[in-house]
Amino acid sequence: MMAKWRKIWSLSLKEFIHLRSDWWLPVFMLFGGALELLLVGWATSRPITNLPLMILDHDRSAASRSFVVSLENTATFNLEEPVYDVAVIEDALRLGEINAAVIIPPDFSSELSSPAGRPIVAVLLNGAESIPATAALRAIEGVTREMGEQILVQRLGLQAEEFEGFIPSLRVWFNESLVEALYTIPAELGLMLEFTVLLFAALSFTRERELGTLENLLVMPFSTLDLVIGKSIPVIMVGFLDFILMLGITHWAFGVPMRGSLALLLVLALVYILVELSKGLMISVMAKTQHQAFLLVMMVGLSDFMFTGYAAPVESMPRVIQWVANFIPAHHFLEIVRGILLKGAGMEVLWPHVLALTILGLFIGGFSMRFVRRSLS
Image (tube, rainbow, N blue to C red):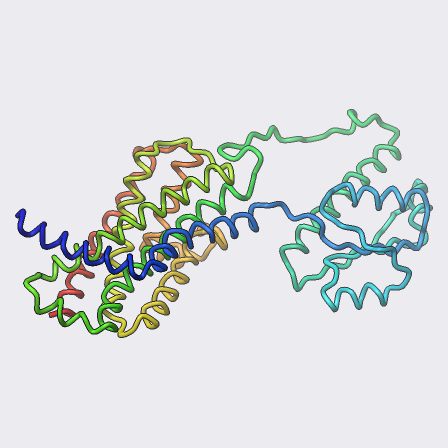
């Protein structure tokens, strides 16, 4: 047994020596995902503000100026210079220079003060950029809704507190401020970890094939299992260090809480790394070149991306897609990460996802090992 482990260690030592001479690969694997997490997390976690907004005020009254100030106070918009022609707005929308425009009619103040008046403003949105357009629409609707309630209270001759109707008693669990980063950052962490492990593992045998050293390894007194374990140890170590680094960034840079067991999360992250490692080794023996391996990793990673809930919640997808998501390891791992970080959940809650991840790992690992043995024999 000791002799077997010495052979495996010699293979791993060979990998570390190769990585020392090819130092950019482990550096890229270790810090590339962390840097991507920082950039994407910073871009997606910040609220949408400073959207360019044009105002065409035909009324030019105190009421219209008050309405414009209310829009500006939402902090969603950055008001452009006043315009006096609809054609300017149309050109700006066509060129993508603004996200929204508001046209105030000349009778705005009179309709506002009239007991039977119906003040109306025209809102133009740049629908080609749907996310900023949605944020702009919500801000404008919030301002107009508040103004509409004030008008109604005045016309009814009531006090503001007398007008209050049905109001739900709201309590938000796990994300009190509804910060989007608490949802997107854990998903980004899981995706970056998957790409890191997949890519590092996928390059292991393809690199040997391109260098012409794979045949030398196959004629040496190493079994296929020895080769797989020896090449897997560096991948596991770099992947695990990358996860710890990204977990620290997730917590300290973006304020994602750690409400559950850190030890449990680290153990399950190791299980997930082993699952992705099996997929990467299978890609490694399938691909003839490192370029092919990279393309296969991108295809597999982007396919898994659709089932992580990052782009859209899995629960909102068609039933067939939800069923397919049960066979994607990344889906279960992200449920585990969010459950431990945000909810403080333990095994009593997470066991279905842990069981599914374990079963998928055993199946993928067994199939990968059989495929690797057949390909290298």
